[in-house]
Image 1 (cartoon, rainbow, N blue to C red):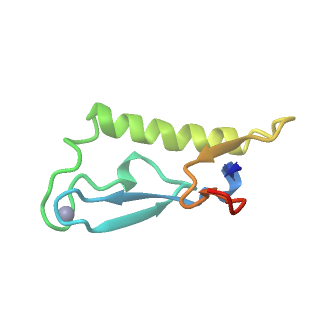
Image 2: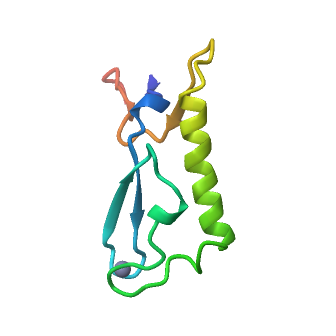
Length: 99
Ligand SMILES: [Zn+2]
């Protein structure tokens, strides 16, 4: 028998966004509420350039993601929305003792 569990996250459960530097692995978590473009740092504390200024398309994509998440979460939709996320540990085989 194979059992798989699905893991879902409601939009209310998403409290912040974490930036992780690919060079020094420093982490910075910013709250999603009231986060705007100018709140996102352009560089890491190690000096690694994360974004090339406020016109950087990648930064704008991140800002749009955050804005849309906040917008949808606060939209009072008549349906619930949940994001499926990777299950960290559940995918196992239960043996009937004959394997
Ligand atoms: Zn860094």
